[in-house]
Image (tube, rainbow, N blue to C red; front, side):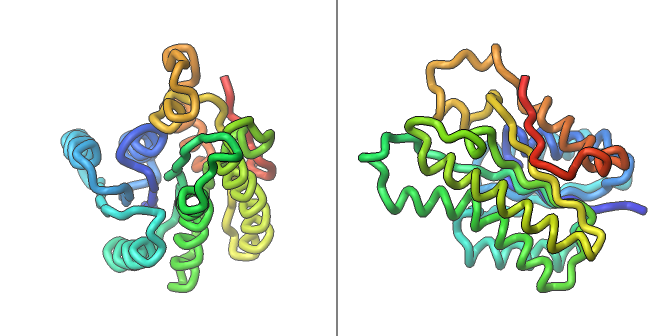
Length: 235
C-alpha cells in the first residue's frame, strides 16, 4: 500500500535529505509533501528532485512559515485536501537565535517556540481533527534539549519541550496504532548549526544525510523495535 509523507523544513538540510530518501529509496512512500518557507533554495531543490522522480511518485510543495500558526493551519488543511491521508509526518523545521540570557528578546523567544514547538503541535492537531490517521510521527528535537547549553536558552528550552511533547503524543496516540518517534541529533552540518556554532568546521561533524538515513530507517518495519524512547543520533 502506497503511503504519503509530509516533511517540514524541506528546502534544505535534514528535511531535504529526508525527502530525497523517502521519494527515491523508500519502497512504501510514493508522495511527499514538502513544506518550507518561500525561497529560491526551495524552488531550486524541488525542481531538481522532480527531475529524479521515478514513475508513479510525486512531490507536492507547500510554501508556508511554520512559525505562522494561522497560515500553517490553512496550509496543512490544503495539503490534506490535495493528497488525502498523511501516513508519515516529519516535524523537522527549526529556528534559533543564540544569545546570552540577558539579551534574550521576548519576541524572538516566542518565534523560537512558535517554530520549534507550536508548529509541530499545530500540524498534528490539525490533521487529527480532520480524521487523519498517522502511521508514524517523527519529531526532530536536539541533544541541546537534553542538556541545556550556555547561550542557547531559547533553543534548548524549545527542544526540551519537543522531547516531552513527543512522550505525551506517544502515549495518547498509541491507541490509534500511531508510532511517535523523537530524534535528538547531535552536531549536524545544517544552516541552523552554523548559527549556533559559526566557527565550527562543518566537514568534521555529522551530515544531514546521516540523520535522514535514521529517519528513513524509523519509517521501515524495523523502526518499531527501537522507537520507545528519545533517540540520540550523534557521530
